[in-house]
Length: 50
Image (cartoon, rainbow, N blue to C red; front, side, top):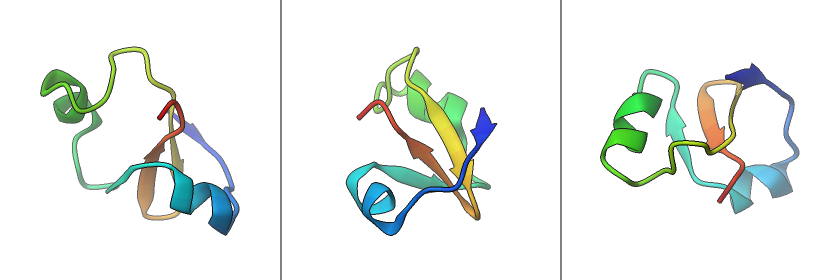
């Protein structure tokens, strides 16, 4: 996972979870794909592939 600065427009377009959440769990449950690009910005992790 990378750290990036995102604009407010980018933040509103992509799904996110709080940083205490589990990216591995989101991928395991099938909500996010196994090869999706995820970045952390502040207190949230954004999936940029969706």
